[in-house]
Length: 351
Image (tube, rainbow, N blue to C red; front, side, top):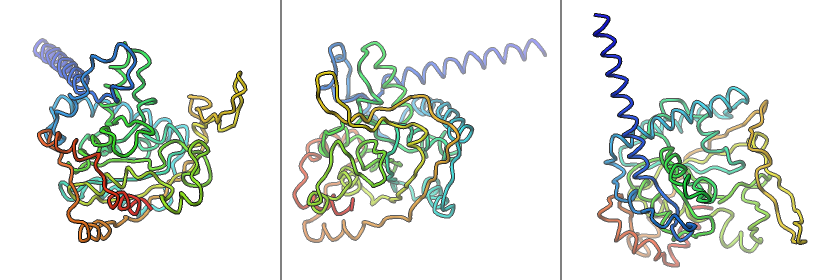
């Protein structure tokens, strides 16, 4: 009996090792990669199309396993940092429960888009991993897909390590985005496919980390009062994701304070050795602080169906992104062709 049990345990261990190895390989093979035009020498042999050959609703089981393992490990670290060494206070528990209800129980194929202010490089996955319960953060079908600038989460400085960085980011359900690349970039279309598949996508519409007291008040890319009146404070990419979704998403805003103390930036105008004045908003220290309280407020659902219906009544049906890889060539052709009236719709949605 003892010998049989030992053999069974060894066999189970070998099977688990094989499954994890297979999951790691599949996650690497289908890793999302940033815009190849930004890769340094040595990266051009990577194929950016592999991730796009997958239907979000028909992903390989090994890929799901890789994501579950990655997000479980990430959640453990996030909860240690955010709830062990710091404290999270949810201001309105009823609104937070509504968010969890939307994550767990919304209608099939109905996407969820959450928007939040961005005050530190740990907002996601740090704050999100610490805030959300285990049954959400460890379940790839429930957990959010996030957008992360390629220069941070998908850094390509080392050709040898870049595949590993891309694999880990992709397994954590993060997609690359080119900061300053505009709303027509193909990388945003990857997020749109997840939306149209009914997934949850979390967006920072300020476009970068801003540790200020006013929403989207960025010293690096400031907008004048006239531009704010014409364009609004937030980036239009989230408006485009919503407008071209196959189903109108559930939209829930979040606002939080305190993460700027956990991982502060320098946030100072400085002069370099050549006398050039620049704004330093780099992270002051990558070791997270402790003893801070992060206040999180979840807002009520935002309704935009009336804006979309009014636009379609006046200008005709909007192009809707299809999540199927077979429809990707058509979507790639249509994606950059936003009309002036559609641009106005994106602006109206984000205001």
